[in-house]
Length: 260
Ligand SMILES: C[S@@+](CC[C@H](N)C(=O)[O-])C[C@H]1O[C@@H](n2cnc3c(N)ncnc32)[C@H](O)[C@@H]1O
Image 1: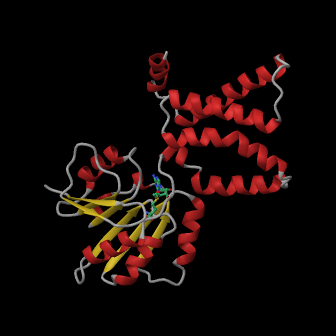
Image 2: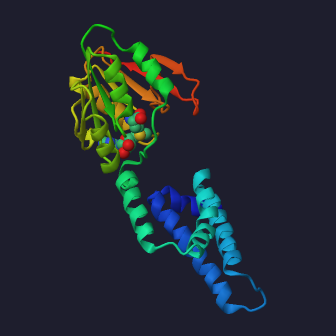
Image 3: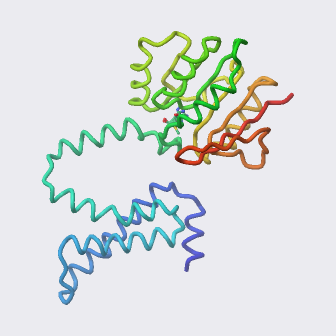
């Protein structure tokens, strides 16, 4: 049975489709139980917990990542709790729009927003050239914190960031209004960017795009330039250097020097 379910999953329907189906199926199963029997009497909240246990069970057996199992376990009880709080629906709409403007494209990119730590900043500061001119590109620059701090410390560098999500992009624009002109952030898709103009390309993405990123970097980056990935390795390609950091997420920087 598990194998059959797993086979369906490995045909790779989008993970959000799977998550939605799990919620619908468990909701329908519990709804059916509520309507067709009278010997179990539970409150709405207790039924929501039953539904969430079923959803968590399905998610676990469909081999969804652990954090998705947790989301399924918490989803319906939290919906019931927030409904009981009687909050105006406009707040939900507002929150939904904000989340869409930050995470909406994750559906396509599979790269959510999380920020590089101060430790990453420190290491990059010490690694970038002190006098020589260079250019640095942050792929998916988030709220622009990393490159604006690096630009302050390295007047000899030009720092570029590309961000796809509107709210982080606007925040980075605002924080750079009065900053030096050596830091430029644009709104767009870094896959459309030509990497050949940059000496250092920095990526803090997710496991999903790393292989494709390597093909693009190998094709476009100049020999001698540097590709740095925070946390995520390129499968099957040994880095030239590994720097382990002692930050909150125990991140690791992987460095590849592009060869001829
Ligand atoms: C993990 S965050 C890293 C933020 C920042 N670079 C840092 O280190 O603090 C990744 C960011 O990449 C953005 N992103 C993902 N795919 C993208 C794409 N194809 N083009 C532009 N930005 C993208 C996401 O919106 C997200 O803000």
